[in-house]
Figure: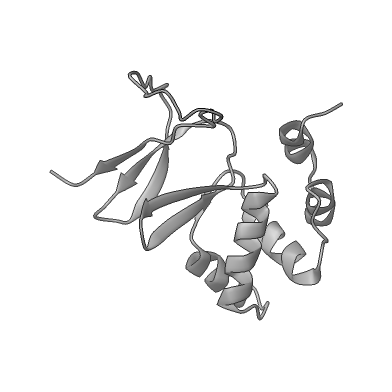
Length: 141
C-alpha cells in the first residue's frame, strides 16, 4: 500500500490530490490547491495565497484561505512553520527539513544541509517525539 507522501507527490490534479488526502474537493479547495502546488515546493502565508487567488480572479475570503490551509495541513498536504506567535508559513514540502527565517525580509527558505539535533529530553510517559522543527533566524550583518 502506498504511503500518503508517495501518493500526494505522484498526484498532479488538485481535485485528486484532495480526494486522496480525504478532503472533499470543493471549488474553493481545488482553486487554492492549484495555486499552492503548481509551482513546486514553496512557502506561503495565508495572506499571500489570498492575494494570489484574488489576482487570478478567484474571489475567496481570507477566512476560507486560513481554513483550507489548516485542513490541508491536517490532511498531510502541507507543513505549518510558525516563526512567531502571530506569523506562520505553510510549506508544500512535507519531507523532513529545516528552515532559515530572514527576519529583515520576513522570508522563509529551506536549509539544504542536514542538521543534527542532540540532547533531546525524554518525552513524557506515553508519548513520543513526532518531529523536531528547527528555524534558524537570520538578519543582515
